[in-house]
Image (cartoon, rainbow, N blue to C red; front, side, top):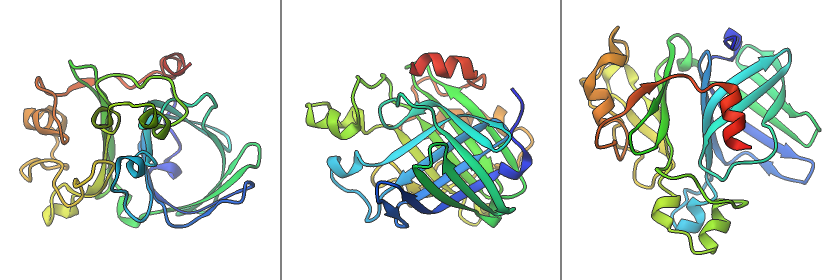
Length: 253
């Protein structure tokens, strides 16, 4: 698969969502980190959710991005919410290099994205898997990172996490999907988490300070794979191949 155009690389913050259904949202904290192939997206309501029902309103996903002309499609390999039947495709227009407009193909929504200036430069990421069945990724863009880790078991069918909770689903398992976003800040506050889908995770560190994201052998440091995330796998994370688009579509169909 071809890499996305360089114009897409970095961290994009959504500053506006409007829909034909009347929604107007400037408050939800939304960040999309894009590398050459992999992406991750985190969406946390404001005020910060506290109860299980509020936490179930969060959204986030990760996978592979495909760009065809003005159309951008995000193939979700893992998702905090139950899998959606519709494809995630937007029509993109760069008004400026750091100011991107996204519109639904059916015209049902309009989003404004602004690129964070400190997200330019380094762009890297790896797909991960664990012996317990989890998948995830660690993505880097400039001074930012976004880590995603799926649940141990797939979600049962349902329209939303809220519905699954209402049906008596086990909250700890349903809400265990981790998406943690933050900055390395050139060593001043290494791997500092600013926003996470897991309560209490913001303000903590994703990885030990000794792990340098600029190190040439970053992806070969055992400490990275043994300590990554709020609940590292017992046997550690393993590097995996980038999910193939065909496999993502098959898994979610």
